[in-house]
Image (spheres, rainbow, N blue to C red):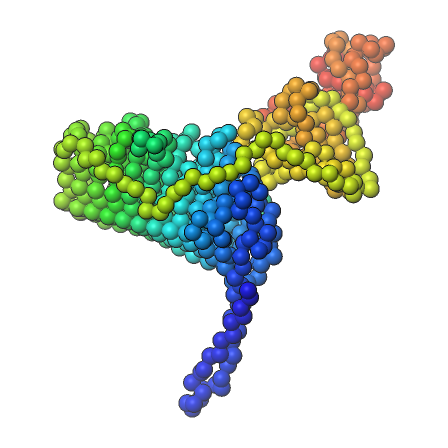
Length: 595
């Protein structure tokens, strides 16, 4: 259904000196049904292409996407969003990821600056659900230079990256999270948060979108209220997967020259059983951690441990900059139930004693505990001029507090990968040329390799298929190459993820690979062959691929003329020199003694 809204504005036309009536037409507003646009909620069909096609088709209007009841499965990949979208999920509508797949909802920023990205994106009653079948499955919102982004009554269930976040806010502002539930963090980097409040910097991004512009601008204007951060529980009620660390950040870019994180509110939330972070006092390993921030409110929250042990510190705020003063820090009216920290409930740390935090208010906080080893507040600077009052620690028996999710979370049935059925296709390429090479040649995956697709044969060849593949399953970014192709559909390489020549092969586009660099120069010398080395048609690892033509032992003459020299530099910086002989073949410089 498409609704065009025409608005007639009445000016002060009846009064002297005023203009006549004007007509202003607002942007069209479009409401669509996700199922009618090709998305399938059967718990089996991958919806990546259908969702992207839907968003690309309706990219001009203010768009509302209704998601009917169903389980919408996604494979690994990105979904590019655009401005002015509202997603409304019906009861029982779930976005689902399984089998270790990773899905990135990407908020592109083709320009630098706070207006460089998207605006006005809202998710209402959305559920993003993962699992730990064949590794942790992941949903991530990678929010870059975006503004006015809202998550209302959403559920993020067991789908946080072990090395990342649910919401990654980079150089964005006016972000609101209300009434939502975040469960489960099976982290390999334990300090990562469900909601990261970060900077516009390539290194900070969960998804590095090609073409995005970075400027180190800080995120500001983040409000998280009335939400829960809970563990995934066993049937007995004990912890199966710890709760996420709720919110924070751990880095300042460009020494804060382009700004510092500010205006963050975390209020009326509940955090239960986050993973204990037990490093030494002052290490920064805390449940809530900010490194450089002003205008911070942590108020009216419930922090509860039912089954988890305590962290070293629960809230840790640190300033590492000599010329920036953290100010207006408010930690008020929170309750800490059985969190039992080892060192403190709140730790304030300024690297430079001459630059203390100012306008600090820590009041009305109440803690109950089974031990009294922790101080409520630790600070490495004098608190003169700040307000610290009516904070209490009461020793008491374990409370037995039970917290249930405020939104119903039900496991959803999905069909797991048991092998991909390949489609039969006619050949569409009119031209294909193949070039073989030594199977031990290799390259590195490029910076944006995860945005590329693997194929069984080159695209356009008979029976080509895009293969389902979990990029997170690879242990190294080095791939081995034994063939390349040039075709109507582009330039391709056949790769393996193992040195073994009989390992499974895939075809991928050239842009997914980064090759060694080669510096060529003329070189007119006679040299004596002294060692046995392979002889190639090109320098080993040349992007055009070298073929072997025997060894130096097969060359009858021991003294040969060298016509060209190439230095090959790897990604690690090591350099190998190759010489081209007068017969046109190449070998290592180490094979020669120069005359």
